[in-house]
Amino acid sequence: MNNYGTRSHALVRGQGCYLYDEQGQPYLDALSGIAVCGLGHSHPAVTKAISQQAAELLHISNLFNIGPQQALADKLCRAAKMERAFFSNSGAEANEAAIKIARKYGLQKGLAQPKILATHGSFHGRTLATLSATGNAKVQDGFLALRDSFVHVNYNDIDAIKQAAAENPEIVAILVEPIQGEGGVNTPASDYLEQLREICDQNQWLLMLDEIQTGNGRTGKYFAYQHSNILPDVLTTAKGLGNGVPIGACLARGLAAEILQPGNHGSTYGGNPLVCRAAEAVADALADGKLIQRAAVLGEKISSGISQGLSNNPLFVEVRGRGLMIGIELTQSCPELVELAWQQQLIINVTAANTIRLLPPLILSDEQADEIINKIVALVNQLSATHTAL
Ligand code: PLP
Image (cartoon, rainbow, N blue to C red):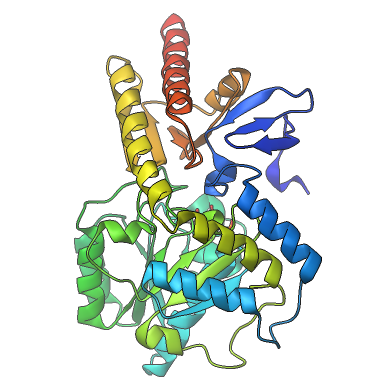
């Protein structure tokens, strides 16, 4: 189907931070399959886990106890300070589980039509429920979004939430990204999550964090909420969780962890032995914290290098983000930069029309970080030169 439009380039192989085209040309990957391959491509531990598990047991149903699933749940719950896990095959499905938890929680509270508060500019997935949670008309239009089930307010606006709380007694939960990814790497005030926690406690709402893009070391902590001093009730993650195998997880603690009961939810493939063994290899690689710390250091280096390099460029607005989740906002939309970067053998992304997004692997070397800085600065300079010439 034409949902991805025309794709002009093919990549056939990956190794570390490089992807290769059919001619064997290398491309420095500053996107990681959109925050997926945090350990880079063909990581030996992930490859080994997948090969060994494939030779042993690919799949059994969730009617049976699955050892690797239990082991992964233990590791993730320890890392996230959560108590229970449900495994899905994607980020959207992890959020579906969270949405179901919130709705059942609301019904148990006696509300006929429980609502979830979400934010404008968010992205939570493409299933019917998650596109309804997504605060972006372009994602929703044409699909009869379930508008009665969500209330949207501006991101990073605590007063708007208090007002929504006063106007909507049916709200039972907040679903929010600690940093909005697709929406433009929008980074809220440093006490945003603490304030959300306080509002949730006051109103007996569940605080549900979508860490599908921000999780698994990307922002310089295992989960981005760990930059603050709170615990969510529900945390969803995917992308970097499996380094490329399709897996998502909805983690929960306390009351929220007890809401889904036998028969309430399920997935044929969710948490199967193959994907769980791969995700365990990722969790093991992150466990000593060194790569996560490295993401923080590299993020500082790239962000300040680009800020300095572009400080006199008229198109440059600011660099945002945390760790290796970096957005560079320009004054004008700049989708053409993706192709210009490709020609320089660099893979990047542009989101929210005018924001260059960098999500490189956590295993990036200093030299590769310098290459990203130099190429981005040169590309934006090239763009502004064309702009001035026009
Ligand atoms: N939530 C966030 C914050 C995301 O960035 C994404 C994907 O970009 C999703 C949810 C949906 O994940 P998936 O594409 O795996 O369904």
